[in-house]
Amino acid sequence: MRVEPLTASIGAELVGLNLADAIHDDDLFAEIRAALLQHKVLFLRDQDISRAEHVAFAERFGQLEDHPVAGSHPQYPGLVQIYKQPDQPMDRYENAWHTDATWREAPPMGCVLRCVEGPAVGADTMWANMVLAYENLPAHVKTEIAGLRARHSIEASFGAAMPIEKRLALKEQYPDPEHPVVRIHPETGEKVLFVNAFTTHFTNFHTAAHVRYGQDYNPGGADLLRYLVSQAFIPEYQVRWRWKPNSMAIWDNRSTQHYAVMDYAPCHRKMERAAIIGDKPFGIGERDIKARTPETALA
Image (cartoon, rainbow, N blue to C red):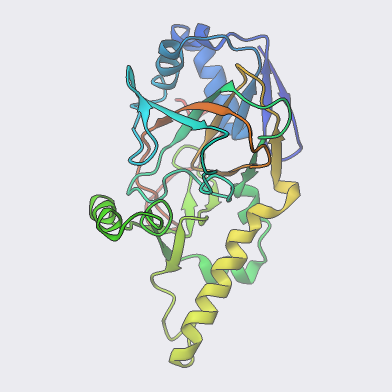
């Protein structure tokens, strides 16, 4: 297996590898996991693997989870089918910078995505390194957001177009969780800027330290949130992947955001994704953690 970086900041292609071999090869899987922690998203070409092998590889990271809106394959729970058809309205929830399912109390730790069918050109996906996005923030912004927390909502995103009864039922099933604005990566100890398209507002911004009068609250907090969300838009933090059938991507959902470029209508685009259950995010000072390198994170 060769690991070939695709940019200076994020992403690498794994060459000379059949991903199915890592299902039973502990040493090979450990190499892949270490590369994932280092590069944050990994790409592979020509992976003619079965759905059972796709699921089995993803389950090496942990238990898989279904999606409450996007359906899973009937024979393979946890293998979500993201199918776009030319005769259907385009889904607008992918073409925004987001970290998957931060509307969960414990968002996924990562995902394994395979292209089943796609257009000859277009339908790329982009990823952004949110560790680098945090590192490059001005010092005064880092100070301001060190203890901030924010709400993330499925109701305000997937639920927004639903009839009110379904929307409220969805929110009851998935109440808006509160996550730290700066997340500590549980394996590497890196600080991650952890706000995205699912983030609605800060929950502890309206304090004497931030607000002189009540009217400061809305523009002050909202402007800061927009600024932080916009950090994913910076090209120097990004990698872009052109899909072909049987191409795959594996990403660390704790340290990245991604954006599915919706420039291919009217065409088919069929993707299958396995999301691995993660842990509840913690922020600066919320847990005593010793930072680890990708080499020691598996110890």
